[in-house]
Length: 481
Image (cartoon, rainbow, N blue to C red; front, side, top):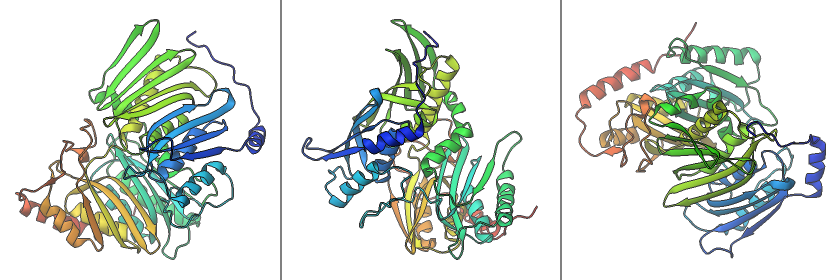
């Protein structure tokens, strides 16, 4: 029974398209069934990845999914989501409900445009208008500042960018264009940009460490940005160190079931076997987009979710998935079970809130990202996670920063940064969710509580000197081989 597989017949993709046309998805948005949340019910012909598509649409709208029940047996997909907005209110806006219905019912490859006045969507798929720059590198303080400075020197305007760090590794996706708004398509120019960036990221690499720099021309179909970041970090094998942060791996037999339990920080994953399914149980602290991250990990590992139950109680999220591999088989080796466990833990950890959140709004221009990140670097701040996008003539960025020395960020530093950056800076005094050991050196302080130290800084002279050094080094142009 260990290697038993359920037979999965081949289905022609054109037949799947025909079935979808005969039985298009149905979406019901119910505000009467619950007094606390809106119920979104989805019925559709099943296909691999449909769960991720639906969850992606809801999370891109910043909706909070507190509970969900999923069933996709028998070739039919039925799901119920309990959702609210970011303020815990029901979804009552008519434009928003219409958008949700149209977005779910429209195929991913459809040419239909989904534009609704008054609904702001984050630019998660910009490959049709901009050149995509993907990087996986060794994480170090000042990384984003160095890369964005080179892009500015080369005349590349950053229209959008997302950066994550995890386990001493970093993944960044830039969407860039010429300073006049055109995508970069000239191959010799793309090669030159790639060469310059490889010099920058290679300067911090030790022997044996991996790095990748990849530029892609505008494409009709582009992978969702955050899903692509997960894929980049999996390819970079950041998940392999999850077991080194205090987690434990153990095998035990319970009623003839094989059970693997692994704890990593605040995340616990166990794998059982039940009635022909591999059963994944995940327990961790709840946070925005958690469901998207776990479903994304399972989908990209080629697992099909047949049944699932998701809930949240007292800020602790519980997720249970009944899955098989896409070929119909269950997990049949210890190595596979351990890899899946580590990949799920990594998917949860990558977006855990760490550091002080700064929201910056400024007039968009060439070199804006370089200037902002240089200010962070000059004041000894490391960027743990960032999301930058343009909205008309304005650029909006969200940065999670920590002190590069491992101390709490002083009030003086925050005020100084706010005074230097040319734009509005809003500081969010978020409390860290948890302390996760084994992170990058720039993640040194993870203790719960405010990230701002109200005590006077004792290192003002040293900080000032370091700031001057960074200002001088920041004036160097692009490196030459």
